[in-house]
Length: 560
Image (cartoon, rainbow, N blue to C red; front, side, top):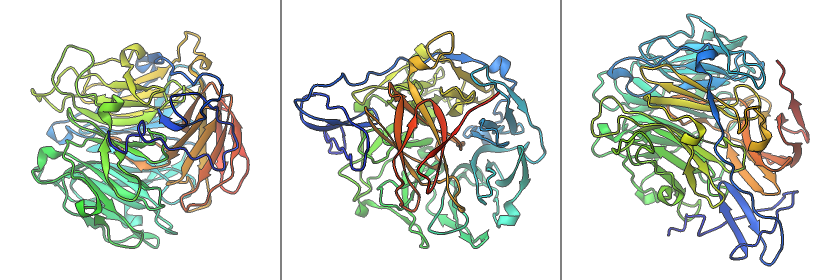
């Protein structure tokens, strides 16, 4: 057993918390981390039973009534990619959708769903957004004007679209000094460095324009109000996902790359040190980095073990990894804990195909609001790869109190056999339950409404919840790089606010946390520059905004 396995090496830090943590009696005194929560234990103390995991929620396929009719299409140029961006483009607090189309035009859909009702959208056509050759997109407020912008990734010239409100956009690449290039781009991440007015942006190149050679990913740093000459992240190994993250909790955000080994022989996964104002440097074995070769498709990061440090999930072909720091934050040395946690997802769980799976988009969220983080993975054959599963349904892995995960997709009613690519878990109808959007290759996208566990759509049996938005003065008005702690009597969850990861698509907006049986929670924000806010007590089952410097949260009551 490695030292990084939190089941063997528990960590708890209760400093500054205002809430009681129950003293459950387990096998030993001290602390143990399970299912994304850090629980404090006190030997010899009588208390209530620890929380139990909830069953899978029931998802309803609302695609036929949603108004969304979109597919990711095309030949070899679009075998990878096919993401979806979710963000509020018209300031009504509802997440809108922007779909990559590949050979078909991309499409923006405005969310018109009534609160708690069937998912409904209306298409918002525009020559600015209806681009062809789009592989993915990520929302981010680049200029901190309060309107989310779109970074649109393409097979060809990437585009920056400036948000104008009311779901309108204008081209902004030239004004920002961004050259879109002509390569095949499928990955993006961004973070603010120091007091820069604009974010540092990384573009992950899959193949060069010749479609035979791994491209070199690029780092774009601002120089005043525009961007300077991009910095090559060389060598390039066919990047399919990337993510800025403060992996060591030291305040420095480095760049993790997931690379597709199908196209290289001597490459591996990468972690780039990106010190503010300095040239990026690739971590090596001399730094403690362990070489890893997988068919890297997507990235997701979350503190799964409860030690306050983010784990990294990497999707691949039959070889998914869950990496945890092995020995603490001093070195970027990771150990794989996927098998022990039950998240390898190496083969289909249904459909009768026994060949290895192909996984794409990973996402950690709590879909049943029981307080234990879950993991959703899209699956789908690349394109007629006979040595990999053809019938390969996506996984919904439900977090358990002992820190493991169990398959819940069949029970949730989402077992399908399209070739899935990008996805998003997001509360589309603002009822406190996370819905599911899946992008499929050469088949219509699927929209699943989370109906909880009852026909009446009552959310309470699935547990309480809290959705948080952040605000701070410009730049970086949405607090990218902040850490959010949510504490209840059952424990504390820790989450980093990031832009990037997944597979070819990302989200901006409400940050969801399941609370289990707790009817309130204490929330604390560590802002991107390291300033630690006060604990704020918030009632459960609300959408709230936390503004930097305020000791109160502002509630948003959905209407319509």
